[in-house]
Image 1: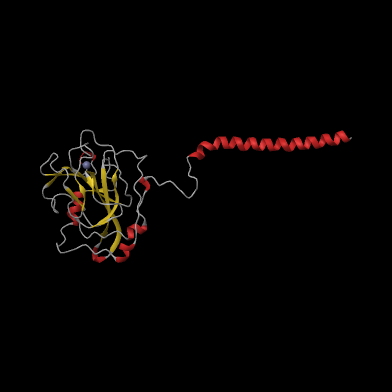
Image 2 (image 1 turned 180 degrees about the vertical axis):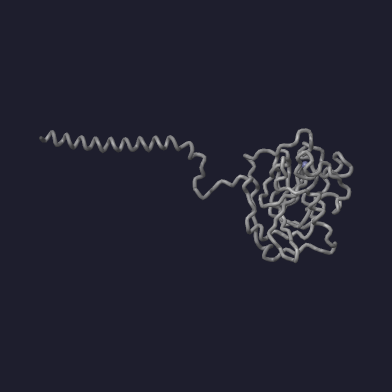
Length: 267
Ligand SMILES: [Zn+2]
């Protein structure tokens, strides 16, 4: 009987040991399966990876402090666009902008100053590579009739720049120099790819598409938003707006597809 009791005890101990061993084996198996997936994750859940640039959106706070652009001017040559021509207009060969050139053609406009078309805030200023090269995007708030200001936001896009002379987050006034005409690192003859976009997503996007997407004709936009009396100045930045620090992170471009240039034509 004593042996029997000891035998039961041994069986119970063995059961416990077996259960423990099985538990360890299961945990180990799960760990083996999950470890490779966990490796790529940040140590703490709060250190989220930055959103893909395609999903970056102007925040309500950024929109609230965007400068109101009372009028727009041409970004190259004179404020009325003298000394320039449009080498590839909007929607020609699926183009989403205007390709502005100095009247000398070829590379004669290389290094010429590029101006902010209207008062705005720099929401992208970096070399985005691909067919774009160095790019600046300004976001502007538009005034509407009767002095009422709404949150309609447009963006002006300046691509293939030789140099960028503004910083991300900076507020610029209409006519301020924001960079110079370039070749997108030798990909094209020097010209300025200029776009006007509606909406709140300041990613590089694409320069060609079958449909206009959120782009509007830059020529038409400038025509409709210029011609204000020369003494109509931009509203002074509101003090509250000037005090709000808006810090926008540079766009993350690692996984971004390069814009697809039309074969044989400048972007
Ligand atoms: Zn272009």
